[in-house]
Image (cartoon, rainbow over the protein chains, first blue to last red):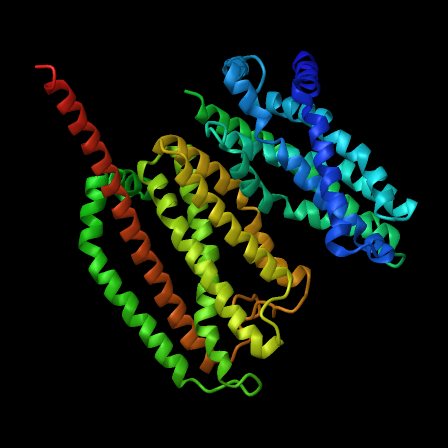
Length: 221
Length: 254
């Protein structure tokens, strides 16, 4: 399992710079926002957490379709499924998700504070947003794995995966954004929405790999 | 003997020919009863007294509430069909799921549209991002996603599994819709019919609502059975075409 994790992380970082492209996309989304909304610093600071969340969500959906498709193309997916007699397939999927998260979503979380600076956000709000992204983005990857597995045999499933996954991650978005707002505006407590976000992440960590494993078994011929 | 238990009957239905025969026999009756009940319910709705605050716009309720109920009911039916596909590999479960998705999407869209038409004079806006409206909108998006997925995969067996898994993952949204009005306590009114302490609607308004709800549910079943029948026929035609092509291929070299 550790070998699989290391292999996937290495592939994710080396193969065509997937991680870097994700961060660039994130940067582009955030950079477009002031053009659309206008360079009013106060307004940007107010909508900053929401913009960061939307950008991170879109950027992490971007690479999801490659999660299993690369392995399917070179045949290693069949080997992983065959190996399910030794390791549980959901566990394998879980490890693959973790590797994907480390390689292509963690850079987004690291980049978020820098982009928060561009959005004129206060240090506290920036830090809180980065923290909620750290807790929330794994949920996106886990539930996205189910979507990616369902559409794995489609030649151009990328857009379909995003359409399928987006309605399912809306709760994550709601609690993530409300937690990051609660940190900067005083009367709302930060902890309850943040704990809900963590709970959602753990819940999806169970549901996503299980569903993805069932879908992968069905898709292999 | 197997026909006495429910599972035995369901297994019996697994034969598509028997299913088609049964559907052919019951469908005209079902359709007739459904139309009759719906018209009766709507007529009762028009005869019912107007609400003292809402005036005659309250009558949209006789359409909106059944549509909204059916949009959730249809998803639960699809989830049950998804279980049937994954667990028992019931050959008709997949047909049921695939046939229900467009109907469910239509009813959800109608529920959203009628609600919005009612909301314009009552709330003064076509749309608010209130808990229930948003979650029903998400339900609509999920229906469309399932539709896109079933249309994108051409192998029926593979698309059946994929759609079933997606449906089961999406079922988390149903309790969110049901309880959204209690959790977020926003603009949409809380449940007033299905309550532990009895309905809070006056009987003169409740009865037309119940009758039209049953009528629309029967219409849903009629449409669903018709769609299932069409799907079975479509698959048979596809198989026949493939066989005809194979036969022509075998004949060609000779």
